[in-house]
Length: 274
Ligand SMILES: C[S@@+](CC[C@H](N)C(=O)[O-])C[C@H]1O[C@@H](n2cnc3c(N)ncnc32)[C@H](O)[C@@H]1O
Image (cartoon, rainbow, N blue to C red):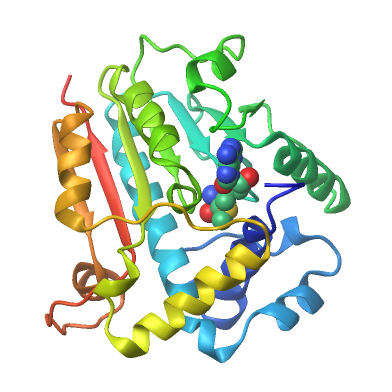
């Protein structure tokens, strides 16, 4: 990645569009538009098209799934959230949990850009938030978090949305190892299936997303078959895995009862019991 992540801007524009076009039906985020600054509406109109509706829905679903699970973890005593590859994520601005500390770990260039965006939007960094710069390909999470105040002996919740496809297998494995070294850790992330899994119509749409990301200098490097992902998570020491594919997402969030198996983007929660 050269400079701030452009895909982070893309997903932030779609999250904002979910608020304006869909009324935030799946995921409410009152800061999604504000964080884009004064030109938000022009930028949204230039990027969001009727064809991107499914992508927008998926972004809303993954955020909702992550934050619902986070709320349960906080009720269970978790006081640390790490948002890995945070982009323009706004959870820290909306954090309703008095004791929850938030660590956003992101590529230094993206993080600098986020600071500027917050300034342009007139939004202050909330006291619960700590910004931690790191390149997952160059540095371990442990080293990056060393002086951040993060306590690796206490439970933590990780949100890692829209990042796995951009990372190498080594960087993914190192992150999973870091997570499973933490007591009662939980992580939510998403991943794409290999392109050959998709039906021809969906494959054209996914291929266009993939090419767009590559054109922005952020090629997709990692894809997984669902059984392969489950095995990877077990191998790295997770005790439990909840993997929602297109059928489960459709039934749970989109009022789509069609149970025909099909490939698509997945969102996963994995956890350690102790
Ligand atoms: C598609 S954006 C997702 C942003 C955010 N999670 C969201 O859903 O809005 C990808 C994010 O991954 C981060 N990223 C990609 N490769 C990275 C790397 N090697 N090290 C650190 N961050 C990386 C980018 O900086 C960016 O914030």
